[in-house]
Amino acid sequence: MLEPSYPYYVANKARKSRKTFDVIDKYTGKVATRAALPDDAALEEAIAAAHDATLPMKHFRPYERQAVLEHCVTRFRERKDELAYALCVEAGKPINDSVGEVTRLIETFKIAAEESVRINGETLNLEISARSAGYHGYTRRVPLGPVSFITPFNFPLNLVAHKVAPAIAAGCPFVLKPSEKTPLGALMMGDILAETDLPKGAFSILPLDGTHAGPLVTDPRFKLLSFTGGLIGWDLKAKAGRKKVTLELGGNAACIVDGDQGERLDAVVERLVFGAFYQSGQSCISVQRILAHDDIYDALRRKLVTKVKALKAGDPKKKATFLGPMIDEAAAERLESWIREARHGGARILCGGGRKGAMLEATLLENVPRDAKLQRMEAFGPVALLQRVASFDEAIATVNDSDFGLQAGVFTNDLRRAMRAWDELEQGGVIVNDVPSFRVDNMPYGGAKSSGIGREGVRYAIDDMSDIRLMVIRDV
Image (cartoon, rainbow, N blue to C red; front, side, top):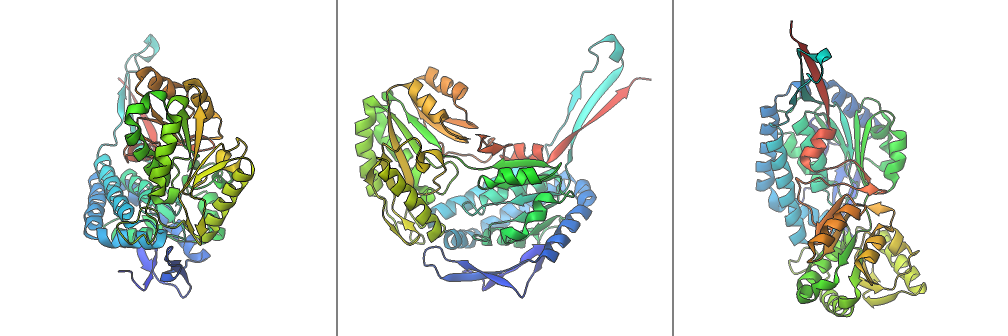
């Protein structure tokens, strides 16, 4: 179902290259297909084209932007199986999860199509004193201009969608660098965008090697850089100059299980296991730290171990598979070394811990030292830590004892505790009675502390990609 090779896109046009790079089937380790490799000249051409497209995109009417986005929705539906299979191969994502991500891709573009025709301003009452009598104020949002995007490997469809779809809705030309580990979804998106009436230069999609992507960060012709990835994002922000920067840099998500959850532990365990191990834990909001109250700790641990041991690992192309490979063997080796470090520090492995190539077993540990990498850093793999807490106060403090703050989960029947968690947890989002891994694509999504700045979620991204312009009229 894959093409022998895939082009990149400059100024809305597909472009082949003599130089290509291999796209690896993450489960078999074999070459699945190839993609054209852009050079520095292609990047400069793409940036210049985006700059030249500033006014044409600004004048591209909201209903025209909506038509482009609706075309994408239709074509994504028509090519759903192809998109899901490519995702399964290039990311090693189980096919059921791959189909789910295509569904979210469609939803994100559908939301953007709806938002594209309701980017509104407001009327201001300026007559707040005698000196402003007879003055009337109005605002509207205008496109920011050319924007640059850098996206990671773990959601190569939907994380791209959360940048591309709002840019089209807002009227911003863009240059996208998808991860070279998983470029196919973005390149297939380019194929569909090339079918539309977008102004020339409205988009370019270049799966560059990271060492050649510097102008996406530093070039002053870009008015915004949106980066999703690791903590290197803070270094990119320092180099970005005067442009606006939004960052989503991950976390080590915690989930509190209150002592009143005894009667619904089976349902809680179901969600915890999903949140920790879906797509091999390679999600910024994967459940990494489970904080369980003394009253239910032993029962929760027993049920978690049983459920984790039963997870089906193997070939992601098989529908029965829940746990596929990590993105590559180096990532699995890194996490295996973190598990080993925690164990040497006194942690106990409750289940898992083994590795074969890029396949790391679903692993559950307890008593992990506070200074271990598994506690302090983002695991980004199929590992979860179980920790006993004596009170809700201790749980809140433990969640906050982290450099990260993307999302946290709280299972509780006490509304006061739920509201307190919302007040006190230093997180971008608090999910009550579910795991922090929950996300709907119209909600604001982003982090506090080292987890980043700014918010995704289509409407919120449109706000970042536009400026408020004021007009004041005086009665004469």
